[in-house]
Image 1 (cartoon, one colour):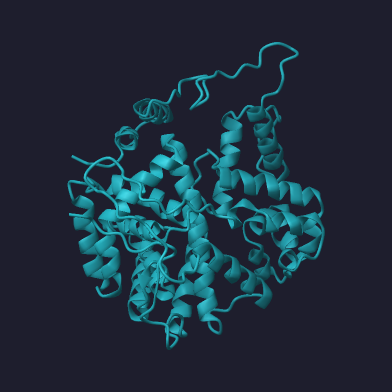
Image 2: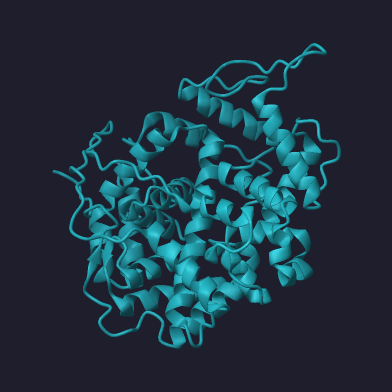
Length: 434
């Protein structure tokens, strides 16, 4: 029997048995929420049990409805038409949201995560404030939707020959807003020794030595990419790989938010479950720098199938893996991110091996090993070329494969003096206590 958080496990189990209609999926989510003691029934707001009431001519527009109207206005403005802006996210709005998500390379669920909503509404605000004039080439190539790409990652404008106004502080309000965009300021959960239920007690988590934040690394990498212009993997292989890592990190956080929204589980409860998974995978993480690709995948599958975790089912392992990978990046916890990625690898999701390449190259949560980093890069890109389901940004898979393969072939992750150091991202490796 699994000793993971029972409420989350119930919610996940309910969702996994659903293979039919959208209404069945809704029922599964409601069942899972009920297992957590959360009221989530038709006409109610999850976690509060209060019904929306808009009856009466003089009724005040609720904050949720105001937010929905902002979303609808932005969707219409970026030519993802929803029709009338009324604050009710019906079928037209859900279809438009899915189109927006597909355009951005995210899962087209029709349900916005906070991250996706922020990019949409802030992008529309910036465009209305005239920020598009700072990126004439991008606007000419992509239309006003280019502001969405720039809002998510200002370096996106480089491929169209535009400059780095946000990074240098030029321009007006747009620059200030970019600097304060939520995705850039990740939340770090205190390193406390939480004792989850079950038989997987965690060791006390204490900062060790001088560490490098993955979030800070991506801020620096994005700024460097903006300053240098278009990143050529032939001449700038290390920077090209850094950019791909940061793209994967951003996508993983959005994917994790989506999964959490589906199951109506709090971040605190998700953190507890992912800490248990990280504890179980501690020995696997330690051995990443010494075992080859096949050995790591085999060992990860054995750990996932351990009765204490109960994640032998590939679908369950993939769901937990996506949640823990993105949550680890959101909390800047390299150990949690690696554990989530190993779960995905254990489920046969070979393209996620790219993440292990990035961590082994940079020493995030693991001792660096450039040879093994290259092996993971080549293995994951080969799986994509063979038609495997993409792990990150599906709409740019071909470009991703070409960039990473070119960077590796031209010296990426092979720089001398880049082996044998460890950077745990603020946490020591986790291991099971007997």
